[in-house]
Length: 345
Image (cartoon, rainbow, N blue to C red; front, side):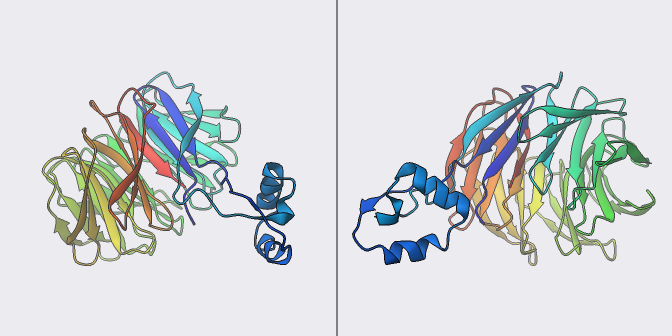
């Protein structure tokens, strides 16, 4: 399924929502009704209604999509934070958005209206990362106050306080079973937590500098981390052992992601490149070069076909890539400061 929604958060204190407009169709007059009716049976009621609005004689028309690849347009700008935005996360239903900011708060937004629905307060310093569980039941936030907090999305109350890191928490990832959390910190470690009890289960040590980003595979077997030591590391969630070190970036690694197929990992770096790696072998498959500033964040589509990345320091752009071809297909420019977080759905 092609992606249809991008959300980006920036130091310019805004969140921007980009959508793929409803597909447009070309029409030609035809005399044969039956083939057209057969095609219409394959469409959703919304698609048929859309066609009818374009051409009232749609039952005498043949049509095809004009949009071969997703083309995103900005549809909303969300304002409310009083500081730069470090992290954004969407619920799976795409009706809800969470954002973490330098202003010490987490804000919940309605994607339909673009309005703030709740402000979550509890961190004593900036909120550097947020993640929403797969079933949309809870949210986790990590902060420069060194702590993680678990919030119920039904009551919007804090339920757990996870303490253990000795420096800022930069990234969080929730396992697909919604039972385990992985966090990465300026203390150079990754920590694994039980979301039922708040207990720390494992500590991954090996990076020689801050851990800026973490991701967990959909099969819950591997954790990938990116660090300011310029490496990407793969860890076994079952044994707690480091599996391999991926080397190739020439500067800080800012962001990592793992494909839904568990076959690829992707990393963005201050060397202005994005690398696509084989998760099994650790070999570089592709190097994507278009950004003119550091690649600060990235996100993969659920079908693993597309990638979105955000940059800064002279290049406040969001870029959309087709992974198979290794080609940039769109550049989105509306932010005027560094983009620290993007999510693609």
